[in-house]
Structures are given as structure tokens and as C-alpha cells.
Length: 173
Ligand code: MG
Image (cartoon, rainbow, N blue to C red; front, side, top):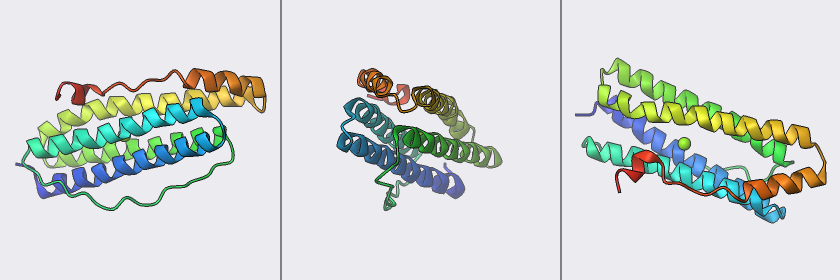
């Protein structure tokens, strides 16, 4: 049986994951409008991953007999100054998500909820990757500066990203 604290924290995390999805979808729309379809593709994949994260938490809540409580999703930014600006915001956002996951882990420890703690380890590893990816593109974009050919090449590279169903969902289906 889930404690009320853990149930509430998981519901808050579901909302945070949907907010992340919404943020990345907004970034994809921004890049589409800017004629950078490769960047847009990368953020669309990111959007799908965040939706999957929300679903993983929803499946988990269900499996533990908790109640899912979907809440309104707050508005997201709609415009940025540059691709570098977008990836800087992505990194800052992922750092916030890491803190949320860590907090969730701390709550599950306080409540001696070892199943929730175990489920969260996948997310802890995932956050390392999320922050690393954002940092990698910040580094690339700093090197590129305002070199048009560099941006063109990076756009082509980002166009190749494909969505893979995250492991906890893949094994569920
Ligand atoms: Mg996420």
C-alpha cells in the first residue's frame, strides 16, 4: 500500500513530466518556425520521451493501487534567442527534474517504501544521460558560434535522432 505522501509525490512528478513534454514540444515548434527541422526533430523525440516518463509513473501508481490525479499543465515559454539559449534552458530544466527525482527518492526512503525507491533508480540513471546530452549540445553550439555551416551540419545530425520506447515501458507492452 502506498503512503499518502508517496502517492502525492508521484502525482506531482506525473505533472512535472507532462510539463517537460510540453516544454520540449514548444521548443520543437520554435525550431520548426525557425526553419531548423533537425533541431525540431530532436525536441519532438524529447517530447515523446517525457510523455513516456509520465506514463511509467502512471503505470507504477496503478500497479501499487494508487490513484492517478491528472492536473492542469502550466504554460511554457514559446520563444528563445538562439539554439544555444534553448539547450541552456534544457540543461537548467533537467537539473531541476533531477532534484525532483532525488527528492522523491528521499521521500520513499523516509517512508521505507523500497519498491518506489527501486523504481526510481531507472530515473536517476536517466537523468545523468539527460543532463549529459544537453551539456554536449551546449558545448557543440559554443564551438559553432554563429557559423552557418556548423549550424547546418548540427541540424542534419539532430535530424537523425529516433524515438526508442524507454525500457520500463517497453517491457510493459
Ligand atoms: Mg523526464
